[in-house]
Image (cartoon, rainbow, N blue to C red; front, side, top):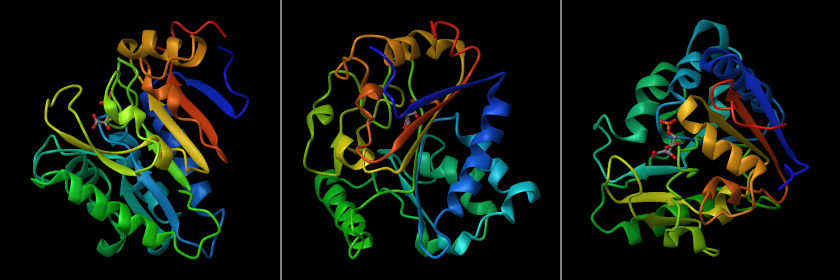
Length: 248
Ligand code: 6PG
């Protein structure tokens, strides 16, 4: 499958240089519409931690108007927000606790709730309210990682969450460690992005990345292929190790 026209792939020597590039892009995108909220969907997992930490350093922190930044979470594990396995915990430790963003502008996914259906619906109502009055709902930046199985957010191969075409936020079955239930943004919501940035590093991602970018279109097997914003661009920031099986 040829790489989509609005997709670009940039290869970096290592995760450090990849994360620095992502930090500069975050800053640049935050200034695109200086009088509007800058709405960002954060990725979970471990790869984005370095990017998040960089944004809180003197080199970057003063380049962002944090009063305009609104942070959402693309997925969350059914664990307490103080649990090391929580995506919120990772973002809080590396970013939220280090930058002057108003706490009211950080929208945690409450995946520890017993009733994930109603918690998902409540979060979706909140997002829809934030986009009221805007011509079309769209996140300025959606950050995503990719698993070695080609999943993104908590959209795992072969799971029902891949088929969701209406709801924006849904409960999701577990797909990898920690093997707990999850909440995730669905394709319809993730694809409401002006800019998607995938951050992918490591040899263990190489096979899946080659399938996602150059293989047959099979999003049920490689869910990251289903990220295809109608009005946006997808940029893959990958390191040499993850790119080692790409043919281009
Ligand atoms: C999660 C993440 C997940 C992550 C990938 C890559 O909750 O697990 O949202 O989609 O982005 O698994 O994770 P790493 O960056 O740790 O490789």
